[in-house]
Image (cartoon, rainbow, N blue to C red; front, side, top):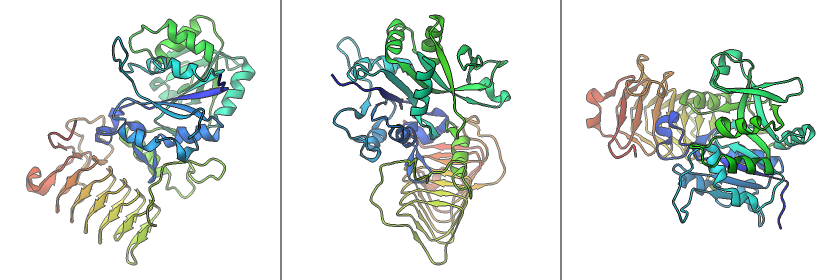
Length: 424
């Protein structure tokens, strides 16, 4: 029988609804990041850099792009005869077909997959954070403490602690109590949603709680283990870690990559971030164009001026166009004479000539102010914006739009334009 010391289960089913139209056709872990990567590349690269060669990726929402991206795992050296990467969608059973209803329910539905490797330890990961972490060091900590479960935690400012699951520990880092989003936090150690379990402990806890609706690690599995007096420890992580779950945090994390000395370095030799790359020609920067403090992906053609922006692969930016503080994703085409300020433009978008994005006053978005804010303009994938349109701040466009959709050739700040049939 195969025996693996530790296998990883990567939860990548999330819709990421706070990313608005960026995730209406694609799972959050498959969203582009930093020009050439996708969000899921980070935990996958962490696995292979940490010596973990068996990863189950649990998908659910809009999995097509994710499945195509992962394929058989070649870019991460995860194409193995035994182990490697396996995509695990929900599937039909004889009695009923069941969607994954919670993080731990998704793991429970794949007990047979885990059992087939007879692991000693199981590492549970989330597919939507940007960070570098050596899981082997966390495993060493887990063994040294004789823990049955170890939860990675990160110190956060006390005033932000109420947004997280908070662990309270003794001086030995053993967890004595925990609180989910407490109004008055007693500690600032926030759970990162990264767990190492002894396989026997995890299996027993999953089976015992199988009938809990929406079975979840934070709400059910960890409290269950704690109530049985099992040894739970907190492993403190102090590196860069970013939850890119909102448009603002996604925009910020991309912008941090272009700092002169970036806090998060994509280019470290000893901790590479791997991705599936298309075969593209080199970038073309026209002689009269300007590119300052920006990342420009392979195959991009720049004829205008780009400042402080992340430009994906195969993007075309026309003559006399100015792009500032923006994220333009793969294979988007921006015409001539345009202006883009603080825009997030998804993949395969076509923007006509003379279009201006991000002008005018800041007005809260009328439909979803909690999603579209901080002055960002968001354009969903495969959208089309015709020539000569001006678009305000905190706005959102999704779909193939035409002149008729814009009274006075304008979409005012705070407005949302989603063409029927495009939001499904």
